[in-house]
Length: 287
Image (cartoon, rainbow, N blue to C red; front, side, top):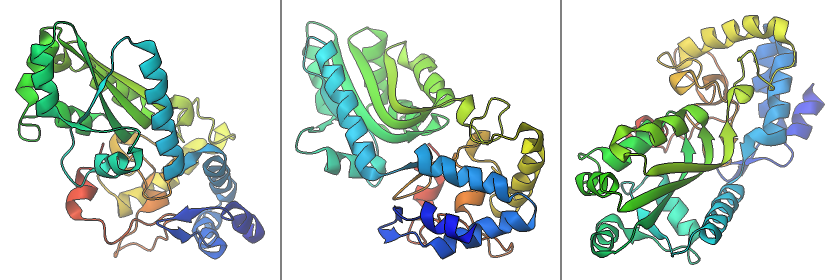
């Protein structure tokens, strides 16, 4: 098992540092002691196969989605900035330039008001879990001072908004697209969609092969999760993800992968950086 951990971590870099095989083994040993080493091994295999996503892949996914979208519409879409400074959109905008340039939402809506036909607006995000953060960015006046103007333009059929995202939960997609404030004008296009087959403990899960042990393993992970992330022991809104990027871990991912506590002895696989601000942890990673 120790050699397996070194092989699994061979190409991984997290927060600009190589992931050490010894650290992976220390993480998996916690499951071994509880009799769940095979389940932890399968989670590592899933991460290696598709669950560990690099920043480069995310940027490539977003550019690919945008390029295909442009071929399907007649006019040039306007890429708008909708997130507060310091959120994930900031690093995405930096990485997408110079091919993709962002416009202030106010300026974009001024163009919309003077246009003779419906206009396509576009925005980007790396992760959508429940969809709550994206809904707030778009429609909450406390966060988006142009929310009323955007809602009005959507209600009048003057604008369509397409959100390109690298990783998105089907529940979050449904929440964003179905928000009544969007008047049916909002759509989400994701490069990697998380459905029930990609939830670790779902009956249709393809992450774990042994269905008869899945309930017991869920109980172990939930018990540990209650100690290290009590409000959401199986991930934000019970998302049950097994997803990580090379720069952060989404809040929908099982806390046993990323969380730790000063009052409970647990070694995370991909620990969250201590430099991450409390505000970003609560809001940006909520998604």
